Length: 224
Image (tube, rainbow, N blue to C red):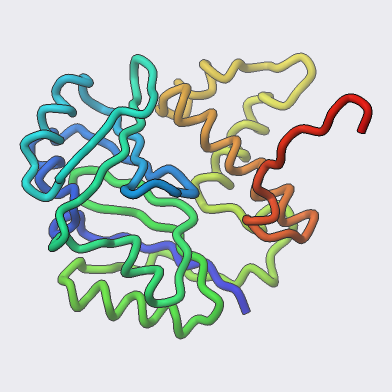
């Protein structure tokens, strides 16, 4: 039975600990579906120059490259030093899939999908072995959920509920994306990405397809 475990762990000991120390106001959100050699991370909460200084000075970070961004948030591909605790790889080794990951100076919050509850226990044990102080916020089975929640992370679910409550899906809209992002205290880019992932999760769940099957395919020609 597939389950979702929502975990909070200490950021101390992870690859971004030094960066959080040098940029205390920093927030981080991992980009879903990482396919590069490193990790794609949305960084915000501080000026771009301050963030890049922190990236350059952190001994746990070997390389970084700016991928995209706007005036408030920037997507970086980050490669960590070999001896750094690879949080995402650790979860993968224990049978988990990270659906959502965000961090501030003190902690990471992870939404992890597992096939068996015993996998969640194994992940918790491994995190404890690395002194990452894991705390289970929520553990629930997806099979018994309604279609409106199935496949969504907690952040995605709460964002969609807020969008509905504020009239974002009305025609015409009662609130713009910029206004909604200000209400939720996230950047316009972060809100756009979160909504896109939520739409994809809902569609994949409704159509009963896997995340891989839901990957976009080349657009057909007009004659198709």
